[in-house]
Length: 126
Image (cartoon, rainbow, N blue to C red; front, side, top):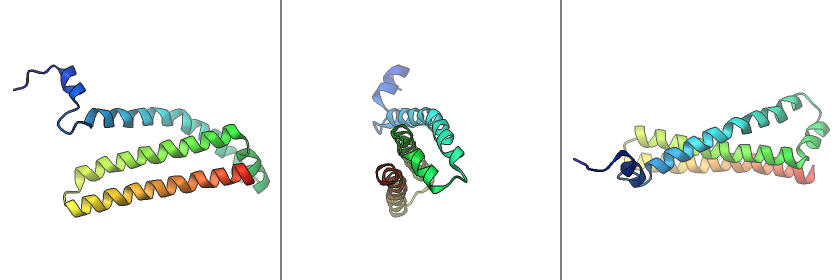
């Protein structure tokens, strides 16, 4: 029997000492993705079917490039953390768990950095 209050249990972060912090971080990223996604769609949707020069000119605007890069950063970090939770919940073998966690982290970072590189390359060189 525990004599801790509900607040005391939350501040203590549970037995792993990271549960509430991880949960809050995921929710914070999810809320941040709402305006970032809307901004991303407002930037990218009008560019569908446009010429190469129009797309390059759009991404050479610093505000648009920064918004798209922020969207990519937050999206792939949120994806990584969400997949990590699913993998930890449903994969029980230690080798498979470690392999999938590493592959997920590397994959999310690779795709995120590739997207950021593409936007940066267009923004800086055209």
